[in-house]
Amino acid sequence: SREASPQKRRNRKRRTMSVREEIRELQARLRVDDAMTTPLANEALREFFSRTATHWAALAVKEAAETEESLDEKELRRKAFLLAEARYETLRPTLRRLNELERAQREGEGTAEPRAALTPHRSGQNPRKYVTW
Image (cartoon, rainbow, N blue to C red):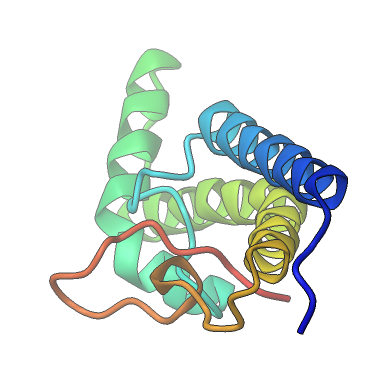
């Protein structure tokens, strides 16, 4: 196979850098590195809430205390679920875009292997996983 021209290599490097920059910007803007507020790869809303329920319940209690609202256990769980659902829906387009960017970056680098960030979470691995829709 023929080697790419210097111009093509520079263009590929520029595209890769811009993809990396967009990935970093999206990750920082929505704090997707936080496993308690970011769905894992292919994680359904119900699974996301089940895994992170204590986090959302604590937020619901805090919000209720700030408004001096009294919540029973069922209301607390409902409010916690609504908070988790809002985060899930907010992240859906961003996580989809991150997956596209990482796929494009891998293709631009000539690697077809998926990165760990796109595979389901396993204990002891990096908790930063993105949802694919």
